[in-house]
Amino acid sequence: MSKILIIEDEPAIRRVLVKILTEEDKSHEISEAENGIDAINQLKKHTYDLIISDIKMPKVDGMEVLDFSKKNTPETPIIMISGHGDLELAVDSMKKGAYDYISKPPDLNRLLTTVRNALDRKQLIVEN
Image 1: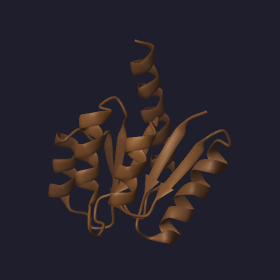
Image 2: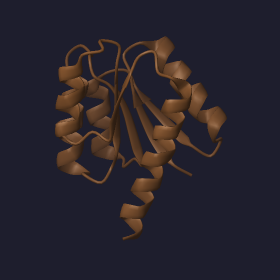
Image 3: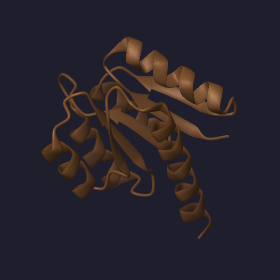
Image 4: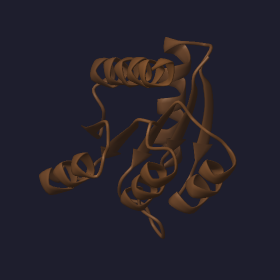
């Protein structure tokens, strides 16, 4: 069972991501956050095997969540998603330690492959 946190301010996209991941593997335990503040509060209380975060959100954005997570649980892979197709944002998020960057709307096969690979990598880090 993998614990996954989905951080997305758009409820419809959040629901789709939850549905896709649940259908892929029913053992996933998925938590949701509708903004960066909620996400950071959850990250203070719980640990996750994977974080999927939108970049552009009001108040606290995904880059701030990425910074917080990397300082506190650097082994947790973070997949950044954005509908703003900004190459500079993608590069910046990868430099700060994101596992991958996916544009919205996400290609489902790429998303699922990236999720599987990130979870496998996390498992290897934990085992070592």
